[in-house]
Amino acid sequence: MRRRPPHEPERYLLLRARRRVTMQVAGAISVMLALGGMMVYCVITSDQDTSARRDLAVAAQHAYLSRPPPCVWLFELHGDTVLRSPGAPAVLPVRAALHQAAAGREPRVGQIEIAGQSYLVHTRRRGGVAVQAAMDLRYQAAERHRLLRTLAAAELTGLLAALMIGQIVARRAIAPLGEALARQRRFAADVSHELRTPLTRLHIRAQIVARGLRRGNDPLLAAAEVDRLVNGTRQLGDVVEDLLLTAQFGQLRRPFAPVDLAALAEELVLAEAARAEVHGVTIEVRRQGPGGHVVRGAQSALRRVISALLDNALTHTRAGGHIWVILSGGPETVRLDVRDDGVGLDPRDAERLFTRFVGGSRSGGLGLGLALVREVVDGHGGTVTADGRPGAGAVFTVRLPADPAAAARPPYLPEPVGHPITLPEDSGGGPHLEGRGVPGRSGARSGPGPEP
Image 1 (spheres, one colour):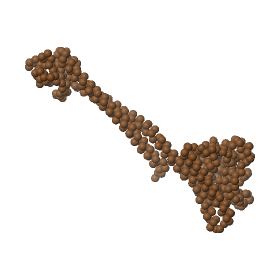
Image 2 (cartoon, helix red, strand yellow):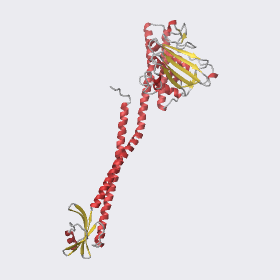
Image 3 (tube, helix red, strand yellow):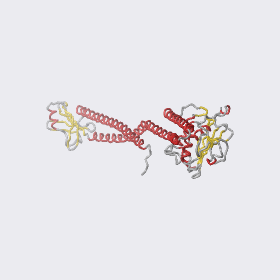
Image 4 (cartoon, one colour):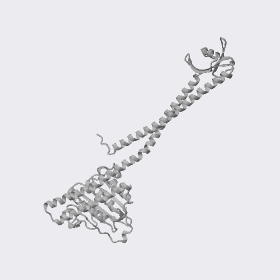
């Protein structure tokens, strides 16, 4: 059974609304065309009747019996004898009307049906003689039929044009609604995705605190874990604030400030330590090169970038695997690599990973995580790329413009998030290297080391 996309009900509602608007607009235009056609038909029919009555009246008063006007026949009553124009129909005249006119009655005009033909007859008295003028209405009827066919064709053409116009109007009218629904759906998806990782991190951290309290562990260690919980809730608040700003203004509007990307990466690796321990994965941070790692940006937004890349790497790295966060700085660019030895990716799909609701096996449940990463990185004037091979791990590279004023300032040292501990030799971090609050199999390193 085909899985329906999450936006399909909204799309159905938009299509239904568009069809309704189209039909309403087309119906209104069609009714206007029909009313216009009826008015034209009535006016022309009235003009024809008025013109015919006028021509018959003039013919009955002034025309000669031997030379009547076109399409008109004249009849005169002399005693009991009726004189007629050449070519007059045998079914005419209407003798009763002639005798009434001869008797001095008022002129009469009427339409009669004789032998399946319609005639307009004008009867009056002229100079003591009863005169009758008759006109065959078949030609007027033929003109009216042609007019009706023309109006019907015009109505059909107008209906097709009305449907096209209605479609255009409907698209323009429904476009704001569709955009509003898309933004609503996008905001809901962003919120659900962005909050998933911090909440998972806090949940695991809270489980560790609860387990330590039940076992009666050192209160100092419990206090350190609680401090990390407090720090995680603050970061979660920053994520919510950024999402609200994005929904309100359409883009990130928080003022940019110097951000030490390496310190931020170490902080997030420390925050992910508990989850990495649960997954049996080792995380290391490496600083390479002589340059600094300070960029200008929104710290909360850049934290979301690194968090999403770490979450992506943790999701696709098996137990016993490794994740390396490598930072290198230059005079113009700071580079951040998040490398893992997990399931890898197909290089041909690298660009699709950053497309909303398309993504791939490494882009998150709805194809949002890496798409949001690209949006934030683009907003900071940087780039993000992906590379890898199936079964041989993947690397995601973020390049951001370096802070030009960073060289004139002393290096930024972040406040410690927790109490330092010493990693054992079997932790994958080397013999007795100092980590910063990274328990279990996760470690934070500075300085060069062997490439993964």
